[in-house]
Image 1 (spheres, helix red, strand yellow):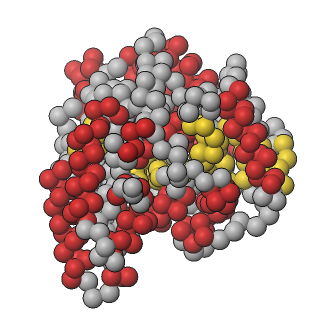
Image 2: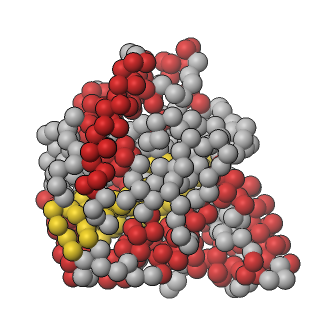
Length: 474
Protein backbone atom coordinates (compact mmCIF):
# COMPACT_ATOMS: atom_id res chain seq x y z
CA UNK A 1 0.00 0.00 0.00
CA UNK A 2 1.36 3.46 -0.94
CA UNK A 3 0.77 6.28 1.53
CA UNK A 4 0.83 9.97 0.68
CA UNK A 5 3.96 10.31 2.82
CA UNK A 6 5.71 7.68 0.67
CA UNK A 7 5.81 10.09 -2.27
CA UNK A 8 8.35 12.69 -1.14
CA UNK A 9 8.43 16.36 -2.10
CA UNK A 10 9.16 16.04 -5.83
CA UNK A 11 6.44 13.51 -6.50
CA UNK A 12 3.95 15.38 -4.33
CA UNK A 13 4.65 18.62 -6.18
CA UNK A 14 4.25 16.91 -9.57
CA UNK A 15 1.01 15.18 -8.52
CA UNK A 16 -0.42 18.47 -7.24
CA UNK A 17 0.49 20.32 -10.47
CA UNK A 18 -1.10 17.48 -12.47
CA UNK A 19 -4.25 17.80 -10.31
CA UNK A 20 -3.89 14.17 -9.24
CA UNK A 21 -3.58 15.15 -5.57
CA UNK A 22 -5.24 17.98 -3.69
CA UNK A 23 -3.01 20.24 -1.54
CA UNK A 24 -5.82 20.22 1.03
CA UNK A 25 -5.84 16.41 1.20
CA UNK A 26 -2.04 16.27 1.39
CA UNK A 27 -1.98 18.80 4.23
CA UNK A 28 -4.73 16.98 6.13
CA UNK A 29 -2.78 13.75 5.77
CA UNK A 30 0.28 15.25 7.45
CA UNK A 31 -1.72 17.10 10.11
CA UNK A 32 -3.42 13.82 11.01
CA UNK A 33 -0.05 12.05 11.36
CA UNK A 34 1.30 14.88 13.53
CA UNK A 35 -1.74 14.68 15.80
CA UNK A 36 -1.57 10.88 16.11
CA UNK A 37 2.16 10.21 16.23
CA UNK A 38 4.16 13.25 17.29
CA UNK A 39 3.74 12.55 21.00
CA UNK A 40 6.13 9.63 20.40
CA UNK A 41 8.67 11.55 18.28
CA UNK A 42 8.80 15.11 19.66
CA UNK A 43 9.24 16.52 16.17
CA UNK A 44 7.12 19.66 16.54
CA UNK A 45 7.18 22.29 19.28
CA UNK A 46 4.35 24.25 17.61
CA UNK A 47 1.90 23.04 14.97
CA UNK A 48 -0.02 25.51 12.81
CA UNK A 49 -3.02 23.53 11.50
CA UNK A 50 -5.31 26.48 10.72
CA UNK A 51 -2.58 28.36 8.87
CA UNK A 52 -1.64 25.15 7.01
CA UNK A 53 -5.24 24.55 5.93
CA UNK A 54 -5.64 28.12 4.69
CA UNK A 55 -2.36 27.96 2.73
CA UNK A 56 -3.41 24.59 1.27
CA UNK A 57 -6.77 26.02 0.17
CA UNK A 58 -5.02 28.93 -1.55
CA UNK A 59 -2.60 26.52 -3.24
CA UNK A 60 -5.48 24.39 -4.50
CA UNK A 61 -7.20 27.46 -5.93
CA UNK A 62 -3.99 28.42 -7.78
CA UNK A 63 -3.68 24.93 -9.25
CA UNK A 64 -7.29 24.83 -10.44
CA UNK A 65 -7.07 28.30 -12.00
CA UNK A 66 -3.60 27.98 -13.56
CA UNK A 67 -3.62 28.15 -17.39
CA UNK A 68 -0.19 26.46 -17.43
CA UNK A 69 0.48 24.24 -14.38
CA UNK A 70 4.14 23.86 -15.43
CA UNK A 71 4.69 27.51 -14.49
CA UNK A 72 3.40 27.12 -10.94
CA UNK A 73 5.87 27.53 -8.03
CA UNK A 74 8.06 24.43 -7.48
CA UNK A 75 6.71 23.51 -4.02
CA UNK A 76 3.11 24.62 -4.47
CA UNK A 77 0.97 22.76 -1.93
CA UNK A 78 3.91 20.78 -0.48
CA UNK A 79 4.13 20.91 3.34
CA UNK A 80 7.53 22.09 4.67
CA UNK A 81 8.01 22.76 8.40
CA UNK A 82 10.42 25.42 9.67
CA UNK A 83 12.93 24.95 12.49
CA UNK A 84 12.11 26.87 15.67
CA UNK A 85 15.33 28.89 15.42
CA UNK A 86 13.89 30.60 12.32
CA UNK A 87 11.36 33.38 12.60
CA UNK A 88 7.93 33.20 10.96
CA UNK A 89 5.77 36.30 11.18
CA UNK A 90 2.85 35.74 13.53
CA UNK A 91 3.95 32.27 14.68
CA UNK A 92 5.24 31.33 18.14
CA UNK A 93 9.05 31.07 18.28
CA UNK A 94 10.67 29.59 21.39
CA UNK A 95 14.27 28.97 20.24
CA UNK A 96 14.01 25.92 22.51
CA UNK A 97 14.08 28.17 25.58
CA UNK A 98 11.75 29.02 28.45
CA UNK A 99 13.05 32.58 28.15
CA UNK A 100 11.26 32.81 24.77
CA UNK A 101 8.26 30.59 25.55
CA UNK A 102 5.73 33.38 24.97
CA UNK A 103 7.50 35.05 22.05
CA UNK A 104 5.78 35.49 18.65
CA UNK A 105 7.68 36.12 15.42
CA UNK A 106 7.38 39.64 13.99
CA UNK A 107 8.96 39.03 10.55
CA UNK A 108 9.85 36.21 8.17
CA UNK A 109 13.43 34.99 7.93
CA UNK A 110 14.75 35.12 4.37
CA UNK A 111 14.57 31.34 4.02
CA UNK A 112 10.93 31.42 5.20
CA UNK A 113 10.16 34.08 2.58
CA UNK A 114 11.69 31.89 -0.13
CA UNK A 115 9.77 28.79 1.03
CA UNK A 116 6.54 30.79 0.98
CA UNK A 117 7.27 32.17 -2.51
CA UNK A 118 7.87 28.58 -3.66
CA UNK A 119 4.31 27.75 -2.58
CA UNK A 120 5.04 25.53 0.43
CA UNK A 121 2.56 24.96 3.24
CA UNK A 122 3.72 25.57 6.83
CA UNK A 123 2.82 22.62 9.07
CA UNK A 124 4.52 24.18 12.10
CA UNK A 125 7.82 24.77 13.86
CA UNK A 126 10.14 21.82 14.51
CA UNK A 127 11.83 21.30 17.86
CA UNK A 128 15.32 22.54 18.58
CA UNK A 129 17.50 22.60 21.71
CA UNK A 130 17.99 25.90 23.51
CA UNK A 131 19.37 28.45 21.00
CA UNK A 132 20.45 25.49 18.80
CA UNK A 133 23.65 25.07 20.82
CA UNK A 134 23.87 21.29 21.52
CA UNK A 135 23.98 18.30 19.15
CA UNK A 136 20.82 16.77 20.68
CA UNK A 137 17.26 18.11 20.96
CA UNK A 138 16.08 18.10 24.57
CA UNK A 139 14.67 21.38 25.82
CA UNK A 140 12.49 22.71 28.61
CA UNK A 141 9.69 23.74 26.21
CA UNK A 142 8.98 20.50 24.34
CA UNK A 143 9.43 16.72 24.65
CA UNK A 144 12.77 15.31 23.45
CA UNK A 145 13.09 14.72 19.70
CA UNK A 146 13.55 10.97 19.13
CA UNK A 147 14.79 9.01 16.15
CA UNK A 148 11.90 6.97 14.72
CA UNK A 149 14.26 4.00 14.37
CA UNK A 150 14.37 3.61 18.19
CA UNK A 151 12.36 6.10 20.18
CA UNK A 152 14.48 5.54 23.28
CA UNK A 153 17.29 7.32 21.40
CA UNK A 154 17.89 10.94 20.46
CA UNK A 155 17.11 12.35 17.01
CA UNK A 156 20.28 14.43 17.32
CA UNK A 157 20.43 18.18 16.99
CA UNK A 158 20.07 20.91 16.66
CA UNK A 159 17.68 20.14 13.76
CA UNK A 160 16.45 17.08 15.66
CA UNK A 161 12.77 17.92 15.34
CA UNK A 162 13.11 18.48 11.60
CA UNK A 163 14.84 15.13 11.10
CA UNK A 164 12.37 13.26 13.32
CA UNK A 165 9.50 14.77 11.29
CA UNK A 166 10.89 13.66 7.93
CA UNK A 167 12.06 10.22 9.09
CA UNK A 168 8.73 9.54 10.81
CA UNK A 169 6.57 10.61 7.87
CA UNK A 170 5.34 13.77 9.59
CA UNK A 171 6.70 15.98 6.76
CA UNK A 172 7.94 15.20 3.24
CA UNK A 173 11.04 17.42 3.66
CA UNK A 174 12.17 19.99 6.21
CA UNK A 175 14.25 23.12 6.53
CA UNK A 176 17.11 22.83 9.01
CA UNK A 177 20.20 24.78 9.96
CA UNK A 178 23.77 23.74 10.68
CA UNK A 179 26.35 25.63 12.76
CA UNK A 180 28.47 22.69 13.92
CA UNK A 181 26.81 19.69 12.29
CA UNK A 182 23.17 20.44 13.11
CA UNK A 183 21.79 19.15 9.79
CA UNK A 184 24.25 16.28 9.28
CA UNK A 185 24.06 14.91 12.85
CA UNK A 186 20.26 14.39 12.97
CA UNK A 187 20.28 13.21 9.34
CA UNK A 188 22.77 10.51 10.33
CA UNK A 189 20.85 9.25 13.36
CA UNK A 190 17.50 9.42 11.52
CA UNK A 191 18.62 7.78 8.25
CA UNK A 192 18.20 10.85 6.02
CA UNK A 193 20.06 12.85 3.39
CA UNK A 194 20.98 16.32 4.62
CA UNK A 195 22.98 19.16 3.05
CA UNK A 196 25.02 21.84 4.79
CA UNK A 197 25.57 24.28 1.92
CA UNK A 198 28.62 26.46 1.28
CA UNK A 199 28.89 29.49 3.54
CA UNK A 200 26.86 32.30 1.98
CA UNK A 201 24.80 30.03 -0.31
CA UNK A 202 21.61 30.45 1.76
CA UNK A 203 20.77 33.70 3.52
CA UNK A 204 20.79 33.81 7.32
CA UNK A 205 18.97 37.18 7.35
CA UNK A 206 17.35 39.38 8.10
CA UNK A 207 17.18 38.95 11.91
CA UNK A 208 19.98 36.55 12.85
CA UNK A 209 23.51 37.98 12.50
CA UNK A 210 25.93 35.78 10.51
CA UNK A 211 29.02 37.27 12.14
CA UNK A 212 31.10 34.09 12.22
CA UNK A 213 29.65 32.36 9.17
CA UNK A 214 29.48 29.04 11.02
CA UNK A 215 25.77 28.47 10.57
CA UNK A 216 23.68 28.09 7.44
CA UNK A 217 20.18 26.92 6.51
CA UNK A 218 19.81 23.78 4.45
CA UNK A 219 17.51 20.89 3.48
CA UNK A 220 16.73 17.57 5.20
CA UNK A 221 15.05 14.93 3.05
CA UNK A 222 14.65 11.22 2.41
CA UNK A 223 16.09 11.40 -1.10
CA UNK A 224 18.88 13.32 -2.81
CA UNK A 225 16.51 14.79 -5.39
CA UNK A 226 14.09 16.07 -2.76
CA UNK A 227 16.99 17.77 -0.95
CA UNK A 228 18.27 19.24 -4.23
CA UNK A 229 14.82 20.65 -5.01
CA UNK A 230 14.61 22.28 -1.58
CA UNK A 231 18.13 23.70 -1.88
CA UNK A 232 17.22 25.22 -5.26
CA UNK A 233 14.42 27.08 -3.50
CA UNK A 234 16.59 28.22 -0.57
CA UNK A 235 19.77 29.18 -2.44
CA UNK A 236 19.27 32.86 -3.14
CA UNK A 237 21.43 35.63 -1.63
CA UNK A 238 19.63 38.52 0.05
CA UNK A 239 20.59 42.19 0.54
CA UNK A 240 22.83 42.64 3.57
CA UNK A 241 24.20 39.09 3.66
CA UNK A 242 27.75 39.19 5.01
CA UNK A 243 29.01 36.22 2.96
CA UNK A 244 28.52 35.27 -0.67
CA UNK A 245 29.08 31.73 -1.98
CA UNK A 246 30.87 31.12 -5.30
CA UNK A 247 28.38 30.91 -8.18
CA UNK A 248 27.23 27.54 -9.48
CA UNK A 249 26.04 26.50 -12.94
CA UNK A 250 22.54 25.15 -13.42
CA UNK A 251 20.20 23.91 -10.72
CA UNK A 252 20.94 21.41 -7.97
CA UNK A 253 18.09 19.25 -9.24
CA UNK A 254 19.88 19.08 -12.59
CA UNK A 255 23.05 18.06 -10.74
CA UNK A 256 21.15 15.17 -9.14
CA UNK A 257 20.19 13.92 -12.61
CA UNK A 258 23.69 13.83 -14.14
CA UNK A 259 26.55 11.37 -13.52
CA UNK A 260 29.44 12.82 -11.51
CA UNK A 261 32.18 11.36 -13.74
CA UNK A 262 35.27 9.80 -12.19
CA UNK A 263 36.18 11.72 -9.06
CA UNK A 264 39.26 11.88 -6.86
CA UNK A 265 38.06 11.33 -3.30
CA UNK A 266 40.12 11.56 -0.12
CA UNK A 267 39.09 9.82 3.08
CA UNK A 268 39.91 10.04 6.77
CA UNK A 269 38.49 8.62 9.98
CA UNK A 270 41.00 10.34 12.27
CA UNK A 271 39.05 12.64 14.61
CA UNK A 272 40.34 16.16 15.17
CA UNK A 273 39.05 16.04 18.77
CA UNK A 274 41.65 14.54 21.15
CA UNK A 275 40.50 11.32 22.79
CA UNK A 276 37.54 10.73 20.45
CA UNK A 277 37.23 7.09 19.35
CA UNK A 278 35.27 5.91 16.34
CA UNK A 279 32.79 3.12 17.12
CA UNK A 280 33.13 -0.07 15.03
CA UNK A 281 29.67 0.52 13.50
CA UNK A 282 30.79 3.94 12.24
CA UNK A 283 34.04 2.43 10.93
CA UNK A 284 32.02 -0.24 9.10
CA UNK A 285 29.82 2.41 7.45
CA UNK A 286 32.93 4.37 6.41
CA UNK A 287 34.70 1.31 4.98
CA UNK A 288 31.60 0.18 3.10
CA UNK A 289 31.21 3.65 1.60
CA UNK A 290 34.88 3.66 0.58
CA UNK A 291 34.48 0.30 -1.14
CA UNK A 292 31.30 1.44 -2.91
CA UNK A 293 33.01 4.59 -4.20
CA UNK A 294 35.81 2.48 -5.64
CA UNK A 295 33.26 0.07 -7.15
CA UNK A 296 31.69 3.04 -8.92
CA UNK A 297 35.04 3.88 -10.49
CA UNK A 298 36.23 6.71 -8.25
CA UNK A 299 39.79 7.06 -7.03
CA UNK A 300 39.85 6.85 -3.21
CA UNK A 301 43.01 7.88 -1.35
CA UNK A 302 43.92 8.72 2.23
CA UNK A 303 43.58 12.40 3.17
CA UNK A 304 46.89 14.00 4.19
CA UNK A 305 46.80 15.83 7.53
CA UNK A 306 45.13 19.21 6.98
CA UNK A 307 43.88 20.41 10.39
CA UNK A 308 44.86 19.40 13.90
CA UNK A 309 43.58 19.51 17.48
CA UNK A 310 44.63 23.16 17.80
CA UNK A 311 41.38 24.10 15.98
CA UNK A 312 39.18 22.62 18.72
CA UNK A 313 39.66 25.27 21.44
CA UNK A 314 39.38 28.00 18.78
CA UNK A 315 36.01 26.63 17.69
CA UNK A 316 34.96 26.42 21.36
CA UNK A 317 35.81 30.12 21.75
CA UNK A 318 33.56 31.03 18.83
CA UNK A 319 30.78 28.72 20.05
CA UNK A 320 30.81 30.35 23.48
CA UNK A 321 30.62 33.85 22.00
CA UNK A 322 27.88 32.70 19.61
CA UNK A 323 25.86 31.53 22.64
CA UNK A 324 25.77 35.12 23.89
CA UNK A 325 24.29 36.59 20.69
CA UNK A 326 20.70 35.62 21.52
CA UNK A 327 19.44 38.46 23.71
CA UNK A 328 18.09 37.43 27.11
CA UNK A 329 16.72 39.82 29.70
CA UNK A 330 18.98 39.55 32.79
CA UNK A 331 15.91 38.76 34.89
CA UNK A 332 15.27 35.74 32.61
CA UNK A 333 18.80 34.27 32.70
CA UNK A 334 17.77 31.87 35.46
CA UNK A 335 15.32 30.25 33.02
CA UNK A 336 18.19 29.11 30.78
CA UNK A 337 19.43 25.54 30.95
CA UNK A 338 22.75 24.77 32.68
CA UNK A 339 24.65 24.07 29.44
CA UNK A 340 23.46 27.35 27.91
CA UNK A 341 24.46 29.35 30.99
CA UNK A 342 27.86 27.62 31.02
CA UNK A 343 28.50 28.40 27.34
CA UNK A 344 27.31 32.01 27.71
CA UNK A 345 29.63 32.49 30.70
CA UNK A 346 32.54 31.31 28.54
CA UNK A 347 31.48 33.70 25.79
CA UNK A 348 31.08 36.64 28.16
CA UNK A 349 34.58 35.96 29.52
CA UNK A 350 36.10 36.19 26.02
CA UNK A 351 37.60 39.60 25.29
CA UNK A 352 37.44 41.37 21.92
CA UNK A 353 41.16 40.83 21.25
CA UNK A 354 40.83 37.13 22.13
CA UNK A 355 37.97 36.76 19.67
CA UNK A 356 39.92 38.46 16.87
CA UNK A 357 42.97 36.31 17.62
CA UNK A 358 40.79 33.20 17.33
CA UNK A 359 39.57 34.39 13.92
CA UNK A 360 43.13 35.11 12.80
CA UNK A 361 44.30 31.65 13.90
CA UNK A 362 41.44 30.00 12.01
CA UNK A 363 42.23 31.94 8.86
CA UNK A 364 45.88 30.99 9.10
CA UNK A 365 45.04 27.29 9.56
CA UNK A 366 42.62 27.32 6.62
CA UNK A 367 45.09 29.04 4.31
CA UNK A 368 47.33 26.03 4.80
CA UNK A 369 44.50 23.48 4.58
CA UNK A 370 42.65 24.62 1.45
CA UNK A 371 45.44 23.96 -1.08
CA UNK A 372 45.54 20.35 0.15
CA UNK A 373 41.76 19.83 0.34
CA UNK A 374 41.19 21.46 -3.05
CA UNK A 375 43.16 18.64 -4.71
CA UNK A 376 40.11 16.42 -4.15
CA UNK A 377 36.58 16.48 -5.53
CA UNK A 378 35.18 15.19 -2.24
CA UNK A 379 36.36 14.10 1.20
CA UNK A 380 34.80 11.12 3.04
CA UNK A 381 34.50 10.83 6.83
CA UNK A 382 32.20 9.08 9.29
CA UNK A 383 29.47 11.61 10.06
CA UNK A 384 29.55 10.69 13.75
CA UNK A 385 31.90 8.71 15.99
CA UNK A 386 29.05 6.79 17.68
CA UNK A 387 25.66 5.29 16.80
CA UNK A 388 22.50 7.09 18.02
CA UNK A 389 22.63 7.58 21.80
CA UNK A 390 19.87 7.24 24.42
CA UNK A 391 17.78 10.23 25.45
CA UNK A 392 19.58 11.92 28.36
CA UNK A 393 23.06 10.69 27.38
CA UNK A 394 24.26 14.32 27.17
CA UNK A 395 21.50 16.28 28.84
CA UNK A 396 21.66 14.59 32.24
CA UNK A 397 25.35 15.46 32.73
CA UNK A 398 26.96 18.53 34.25
CA UNK A 399 27.76 21.13 31.54
CA UNK A 400 31.49 20.38 31.24
CA UNK A 401 30.91 16.62 30.91
CA UNK A 402 27.92 17.22 28.63
CA UNK A 403 30.05 19.31 26.25
CA UNK A 404 32.92 16.81 26.35
CA UNK A 405 30.55 13.99 25.39
CA UNK A 406 29.21 16.06 22.52
CA UNK A 407 32.74 16.68 21.20
CA UNK A 408 33.49 12.94 21.28
CA UNK A 409 30.16 12.12 19.62
CA UNK A 410 30.63 14.53 16.72
CA UNK A 411 34.36 15.14 16.10
CA UNK A 412 34.13 15.42 12.28
CA UNK A 413 31.31 17.85 11.39
CA UNK A 414 32.36 21.23 12.78
CA UNK A 415 35.56 21.47 10.71
CA UNK A 416 33.42 22.19 7.65
CA UNK A 417 31.45 24.90 9.46
CA UNK A 418 34.76 26.58 10.24
CA UNK A 419 35.98 26.23 6.64
CA UNK A 420 32.59 27.06 5.09
CA UNK A 421 32.76 24.08 2.74
CA UNK A 422 29.60 22.20 1.76
CA UNK A 423 29.04 18.79 3.34
CA UNK A 424 26.31 16.15 3.21
CA UNK A 425 25.21 13.15 5.24
CA UNK A 426 24.52 10.06 3.13
CA UNK A 427 22.45 7.28 4.80
CA UNK A 428 24.12 4.19 3.35
CA UNK A 429 24.44 1.93 6.41
CA UNK A 430 22.28 0.47 9.18
CA UNK A 431 23.91 -1.49 12.04
CA UNK A 432 22.91 -4.88 13.46
CA UNK A 433 20.44 -3.15 15.81
CA UNK A 434 18.68 -1.53 12.85
CA UNK A 435 20.02 1.95 13.63
CA UNK A 436 21.11 4.27 10.79
CA UNK A 437 24.81 5.17 10.59
CA UNK A 438 25.62 7.94 8.13
CA UNK A 439 28.78 8.90 6.28
CA UNK A 440 29.78 12.47 5.43
CA UNK A 441 31.07 13.82 2.15
CA UNK A 442 32.56 17.32 2.05
CA UNK A 443 33.35 19.26 -1.10
CA UNK A 444 35.21 22.28 -2.37
CA UNK A 445 33.80 25.72 -1.60
CA UNK A 446 30.85 26.14 -3.95
CA UNK A 447 30.90 22.41 -4.75
CA UNK A 448 27.36 21.42 -3.71
CA UNK A 449 26.53 20.27 -7.25
CA UNK A 450 29.37 17.73 -7.23
CA UNK A 451 28.30 16.39 -3.83
CA UNK A 452 24.67 16.12 -4.97
CA UNK A 453 25.63 14.35 -8.22
CA UNK A 454 27.87 11.92 -6.32
CA UNK A 455 25.25 11.30 -3.62
CA UNK A 456 22.60 10.58 -6.26
CA UNK A 457 24.95 8.01 -7.79
CA UNK A 458 25.42 6.39 -4.36
CA UNK A 459 21.66 6.40 -3.80
CA UNK A 460 21.08 4.66 -7.12
CA UNK A 461 23.75 2.05 -6.34
CA UNK A 462 22.55 1.37 -2.77
CA UNK A 463 18.96 2.66 -2.52
CA UNK A 464 17.81 3.51 0.99
CA UNK A 465 14.34 4.91 0.27
CA UNK A 466 12.58 1.61 1.05
CA UNK A 467 14.11 1.48 4.54
CA UNK A 468 11.40 2.76 6.86
CA UNK A 469 11.12 2.86 10.67
CA UNK A 470 8.28 0.95 12.39
CA UNK A 471 6.14 4.10 12.84
CA UNK A 472 6.06 4.71 9.08
CA UNK A 473 3.04 2.53 8.29
CA UNK A 474 0.93 3.54 11.28
